Length: 193
Image (cartoon, rainbow, N blue to C red; front, side, top):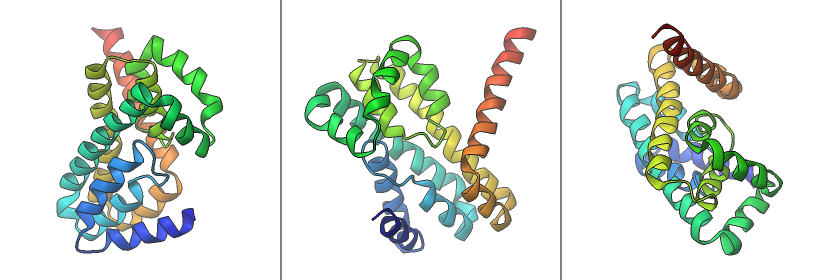
């Protein structure tokens, strides 16, 4: 089933309605859909590098809006819908630990983990269930998702097709390196200022 969804999304990425599909997939992935929007973003940027920043912004906005939907599932519908989504993806066991982390460091968790391949839906539903401040949730989500999608789009914009295979095979490595650089930057600023 996942392979068929992946192939379907790759087909959409090359089609006339690719931006609409990217918006829908980015929105849905933030609360329930299994395939990350990178599957569409990568071929779209390769095909039209001049629109790389537009595609990254579109994925960011729709992912944050979808994140708000995931937040609402966790906040209002955890028992009826949220648990079902978490169980479907095998994430229910991680939920209690994630909820405890959110009560202490929700913004930092969203920024760091929101740009990694960790299922963003786990983060959004958990943030809602933990009753994280909505404004803080939205702000952290914008930062995390923009960093992720603009990083992918930027690498593709500057390096083109040769970097595509590297990103597809090592997305976790690429986003982890970006997180390390971000945290290192904050640490350096704190040390020297």
